[in-house]
Every structure is written in structure tokens, then in C-alpha cells.
Length: 106
Image (cartoon, rainbow, N blue to C red; front, side, top):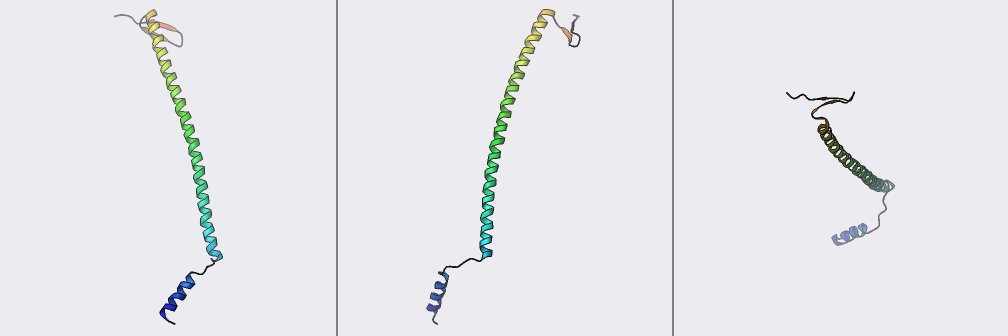
């Protein structure tokens, strides 16, 4: 057999359809199944991220409202102390019994 005919025979063999073994097909199916599972996990992870981001936004909004309430209460306190000081002068108040003791001038 000449070199040309051996080459032609090898090329002809390579161009024929080849059937994969059951084991090879099973290996491919396992790989494909793993890709599908990974894609599903990415989807679940994305949904979880959306939920967490929404929760964080709600926490941020609640914190902003609390800060606003804190600032408003602080302002109210300052105004209240100023009005009491104007009325009674400097001193200390025992909140438990409601007794105000004016500061003595030395």
C-alpha cells in the first residue's frame, strides 16, 4: 500500500461518525448537570442579594428616621432647658422628686 493510500485511509477513518460509549456520554451528562446546578445557584444567589440589599435599604431608611428623631428631640431638650433656665435661673433639677435647687451665686 502506498503512502498516499494509507493517508487517504486514515483520513477516511477520521471522517466516519463515531459513537461515544455509555461511560463517555454519562461523563458529559454529569458535566452538563453540574453547569445547570451552578446556573441555578447563581440565580438563587442573585435573588438572595436582592433581598439583602432591600433589607439594607430599609435599615438605612430606619436609621435616617431615628437620626432625625434624635436631632429633633435634642433641639426640643435645648429649647426646654433654655425656657426653664429663663424661668428659674441656673440650678439643678432632681428628676426623681421634681425638686429644683437654684445655683447660689458666690
